[in-house]
Structure formats: structure tokens, C-alpha cells
Amino acid sequence: MTSPQRSFPRQQSSLEKFLARAPVHLAVVTLALLWSLPTLGLLISSFRRRDDLLESGWWTVFQPPWDLSQFHLGNYGDVITSQGMGQAFLNSLVISIPATVIPISIATFAAYALAWMEFPGRQALFAAIVGLLVVPLQMTLIPILRTYNALDLAGTFVAVWLAHAAYGLPLGIYLLRNYIAALPRDLIEAAAVDGASHLKIFTRLVVPLSMPAIASFAVFQFLWVWNDLLVALVYLGGNQSVAPVTLVLRNLVGDRGQDWHLLTAGAFISMIVPLFVFFALQRYFVRGLLAGSVKG
Image (cartoon, rainbow, N blue to C red):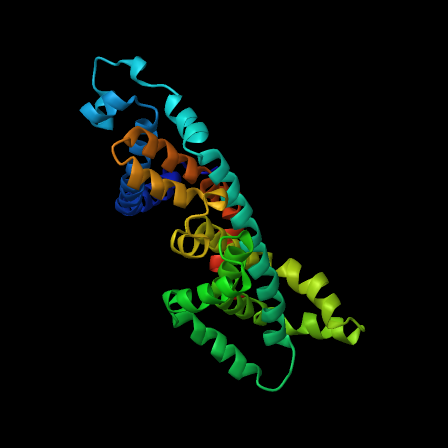
């Protein structure tokens, strides 16, 4: 029969581990709260009326007496209807989705070719692609804009799609190539021995096994395109019919800098889709980041 005293060392060990990790947990929770505090303030401010927002800070809503009459949905209604945020929201989706799918498709094919296909100059080509990572995109704005003007593409969705695809390809090829090259060689060779072509190996083996890395790059690319202002401002110019959310927010800041209640509502609307994408793909995102870090 087991003596009750034997459970004390195990309980003591668990307590010691908890106390040892408590400072780390406390620091993580504190950082998370500090990081989320501006978002909380933005959310509360987006529901407050203009006069209340100008007279006091958002944290005063937690001080008694509580007045619920200062909260309303009118800010969101004004931004979506009167300020063109609804159309800009759709424009951002129209820009972000193709600008994410196009580089992912091209980068995945290129990464497989650089990882598993033998051809002259493969390593030099990969080195050149990696070298493009350090080239600032600001150096390409004027030449590409002149080309777009000559081809009559400036101010269109196609211009932004091609630009974001080109800017995202070096990073996508680099990440996916390293991941695909780490796949088991025996698996690829066995499929080739069985008569599978490169296309079948790519579609049946490489793409399913590389989904964590593909999803990670998709999250990076989508968030970058959605939050981009510079590329959209340069290549779309003043064409308000195709303006994304970031351009509309910039116009709100420039034209209506005093209307903080509209700015907060518009800013929070622009955060909805990135938050949804991140949490929806979080599992793949973490797996992609950790891929290759542990072997065995």
C-alpha cells in the first residue's frame, strides 16, 4: 500500500516549477496586456460620441458614474457610408487576395525547381533572388511607375497586384525553397522511381507537405498588402474608385484630423480582416515558423 507521504515530494516539485516559471508567466502576461492596451483604447473610443471623446480620455469610461449614453454605433455608420470606408474595404480585399495568391503560386513552383530540379546556374539564380531581399523597394517606385504610365496601367488594380507580387516573391521563394529542400529525399526519389513526373510530385507530395510554410508566407504577404500605404499611394495615385482602406484612412487624417471619433472607427474597421486571417491561420503560422527548428 502506497504511503500518503510519498506524494509530497512530487507536489513540492510541481509547486517549485510553478514558482520558478511564475516570473516568466507574469512578464508575458504584462507584455500582452501592454500590447493590447492601445487596441482596447481604440475600440472604446470608436463607440464614443465626438464631444465626449474630445473632452476626456477613453480610460474615464471605467470611472463612476458610468454613462452608457456616450456609446453608440453612429461612428461606424458614418465612416462606412459617408466616408467611403465600405467601398475601400472591398477594394482592399480585391487588392490583397490576388496580391497574395499570385506570389504564393509563383514562389511555390520556383522553390520546388530550385530545391529538387537540376539545371545550370541554379545556385547562382537562388543567390540572386536572396540578394533581392536587401534591395529597398523605394528604388523601384519611379521606374515601375513610368512603365505603368507608358502601358496605361497606373491607377488600376493590376498595377498593385503586379507590384506586390514582385515585391513579395524574393522572400516567398527564399522561405519556401528552404522548407521544400528539407523534405525527405527518400520520399521524393521513391515517387520518381515509381514514374511520377515533376508536376505530379509537386502537386501530390510537395504542396500538401509544405502547407505550414505556404500558410506562414500567406499570412505575412496578406498582412503586408492589407496594411500597405506606400505602394498603393504611388501606383494608384488619386484614383478614389480603387483606393484601399489605408488610403481612405490617410485622407481622413489629412482632411478630417479633428474628427477623432471617425478616425478611431475607421482604424478599427481596418483591423478586422487582419485579425481574422491571423487567428484563422495561427496553427499553420506557428508550424511554419517552427519548421526545421527541431529534427528527429
